[in-house]
Image (cartoon, helix red, strand yellow):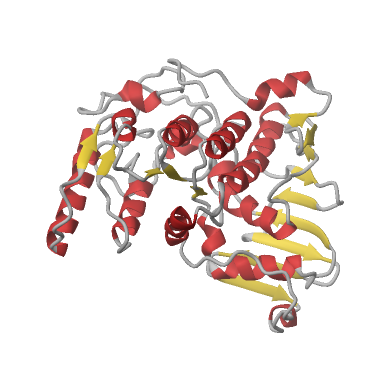
Length: 383
């Protein structure tokens, strides 16, 4: 387990509950969290009465963990700005990878992660786990089978883009390797909003700042835009135009146009709303609404398009480690979905109408915009 904060802790408990898995190492730049998770693992196997378990190792830095030959896979739940470097290093080290969403901080990083997974023949699951929830698969199957007619519009309801970090300096947390927490991000003073002190149970707000994340556009967008892409059958493609709202200060309203004429809007819908010529379907966690209701009541025919069926994102990953098949949210899918999120952010940040080539993954006729595909990295942490 690399990164043991709130999300990492949840994933740790999930994998501990898998009978065919053994957690043997945790890694975190914060001493308090690292030692706490180590004790959690040791206590779990002690109470279980495991005779095979030899103790959970705790690492300050991930390269030491990756050097171990007895580790088959790593789970990465570090902040977004670290995902690409750690995941690529894990692939090179021969580990399969479960990496939290959003997959990357930049478009270039996402594609580099795909290339690494393919080069080293790794199973790579992106943590966009809504694909392993029944209501989302049901909604996307109905849309893909034409139940709402021709899709005209999709409205995706997530929060705003990230903003530049302007947090004041605070007294450093004892036991925290702050320079390593920053890693490829720009050097700046410590603030507990970014790395909360000690063991905490909330999701830290580093995700709201541009240096480390894309805000809710990527944090929740990697869930909801991912479902939109699934329902539209665009897992290997994406939009061709991204149009920002007229107000340069607006944080909602960006429009995506696909080559087939579908318009996707970052707006208010209560989830992911698919609108077609014959009806509409709204889906969110624990929520499925079809209008008219009959669209979701009649079973699909025997020859219908069926989507990948997974009821557990983590179990699906483990199953694919054995079969060597691609998991439900393979790295390519994670790459395409987070690219949609990044494209929206770039349109907001630069208030620029962008034209995108989803095959070449380049902006069309816009040299300046193509410089935004990646950003400079500090300390030699390039990918």
